[in-house]
Length: 167
Image 1 (cartoon, rainbow, N blue to C red):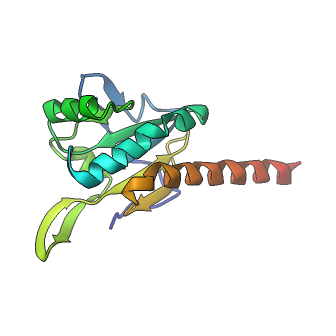
Image 2 (cartoon, rainbow, N blue to C red):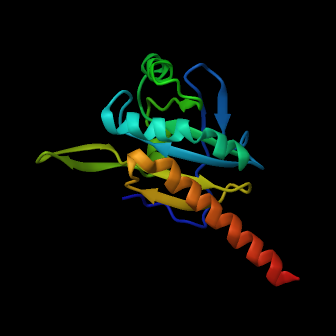
C-alpha cells in the first residue's frame, strides 16, 4: 500500500513520545531505527505485534537499533497500552496523522466487507544516514520482531560482503 521506496530518504518528522520526549529525524541522525505503524492501541493484532517487539528488545539493543511504534491514538491510550503490556520501547504521538501521511500508510481498507480509511500496518527500517533499507507491508503480528531482525541481519550481511569485496 505504501508509496514509499527502499533506498530513499525517510520523510522528515518531529513528534513526541506519549510522555513528552521529543523525537525527530534529526535526533535519530547517525542511528539505525525501526518505525512501525499500527492501527489501534489495545486491539488483538496490535497487542501481538507490540509484545513481539517487546520480547525481542534485547536483540534490537544488541544491534544498536531504536524501535518506535506509531498510531494516531492519544497519549492517555498509549500510556495505558505501555503499562498494561509492559512495553519497553516508546510509542510516538501522531493524532494529527502528519507522520502517517508522510510515510504514506493512510488509505482505504476493507474489514468484514466494510470499506473505510485507516492506517495500513507497515514497518520501515532506516539506516544511520536516514535511508529506508526495508519496508515490511502487512507484517505477521505474532512474529513481527523476527521479520524485522531478519531484515536487519540481511542488511548487516550485505554490508559485510560489500566491505570484503572492496578489499
